[in-house]
Image (cartoon, rainbow, N blue to C red; front, side, top):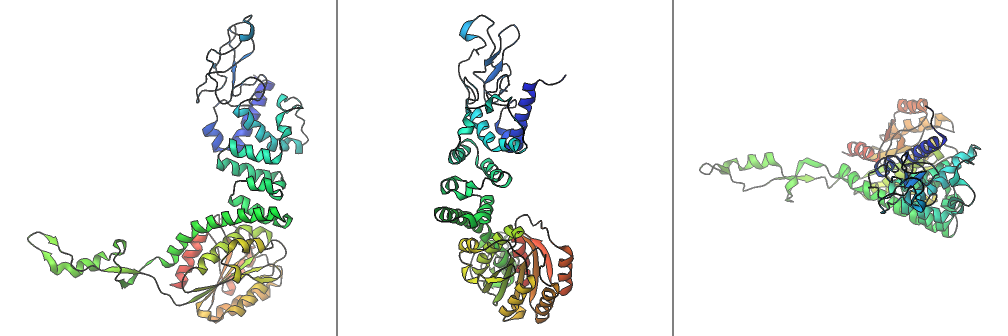
Length: 452
């Protein structure tokens, strides 16, 4: 049996909520949720009158939070009962209920979503004349961007807000979100918003640029805080089991040596080992100086790696006995070593896009090397070389012959799933470089083995 037009509309509406909101829809929305307030639809706040009990659909008052809206929630009282025709028996209303089309919290949520996702239909030239909620005079058409952002943040949880914002920017090109200071200030700071701000910062000036800088600083500092502790532990927090320490910390206790040293104090009468001397491992607190040179490809596809490289360079510089240089390159090379301490300003100054000259960047790295045997050159790039590959390969060979380590990173981010020129990467390996795609913590792990 074919579905009625109203049932098809409701199914489409329900599908949209599921696709857009994902887990939020599954966990928060009633199981029968459809188009709120739509005439004839079984949405929030509507209960179908039973045959012989009421004409039309009645208001589904008194539903419990987990009850399917419209599923027998308000039984009609039969024809000819005047104003109470089809009215539910319990007068307590839930969050999605109320008279009129599209009223209630669920109707408000649906209008907010429609303001954005209705563009999908408009972009395809699909008319929506049959939908009463989209006729002239509907509230959705009266939204301003700041009002819409405010309602999104009020109606949905933070993870859903991030999804909606990302779709607005990436899928529907609502660049006014990041070029209007009032709107930008209301957006939920997130890693995805950070990427968008960095992509569109060329369009910003004045007040909006200052708002953007505050967002970048907030997100970058949070990212740095999360990574710093683990990276430092990975590089410098390992126990050095060849050295001892007088610092008495229980987690550093050398059990084997302590027991062996106190066996002579064993009390046979009490059958107990008396510990007169405790021995502890020492944490690594001294290393000969190492020089880490990071050269980062600033082509548009490397945005994630640019962000994480700036954060990691700042963390590395804060470690003892490490000297760090950071370079950004496209067809030219810019030395950003003086800005490592402030990754926010560093990222705001980087220009993304343009060509790629990896050979030129490696050539500049060679001029910075002072002690090759204690130098690590990390090139973050997708290996799509725009210049002559011979210059890049020759530079790698010279660095390796001098004793420096060369690591080519096709990606440096949490996903570590790069798109790169595999053939060129293989040629770099043949020239002596190590090539990988790493998360920040895996990079710290690799570097710890080199510095050991």
